[in-house]
Length: 256
Image (cartoon, rainbow, N blue to C red; front, side, top):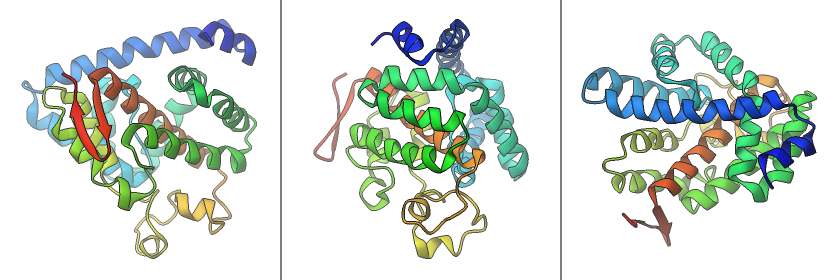
């Protein structure tokens, strides 16, 4: 199904298509700028990578490459200053504004999931977060299964795969750096015992939601966080396809 057909089906206006088209050069430009900047500002970039791709996971957020390089470094500063409220505001604003473009991008890259994703985003728009969040969480695991060979939220099974994949990506600086976001356990996939020890216990947790422990998960903030992870997982999967790196039977190989 083409983007035009999707737009017609969903009743989305032309501005939505323009928003999607606007994301593509932004992502391409960010990746190019990111790689170009590495030898020039290596230490600053390395520090920012740690903040955005690793530490931001503890706040339940995942970077969208369409944000661009300037926002990347601004987010790193917010994480560094531990300004969680401002981080939530900035990230929420971005994903709220980019909602339609992200939906179309996700469906275009994952057409077999289009019907389900469409239902989840419709629930999101009508503020039925009690429905949208579990669907987004399930689709994250589904895309992860295709991407990594294991569900993201099965930490014991998936924890070592991103590191193995990174080892095979020498020369692809952006993907190698960004994949680090999938290594830390983070609060979204902490188990019951660990959640009691977390310094930010209010962060959305997949187990608590799907096993009926968290009865107050249905907020816009939590739904936007799941969208950020879903978008990130899909983008990394797409980037991996472009890099022609394969994972089969637990072994990472490259066709390059």
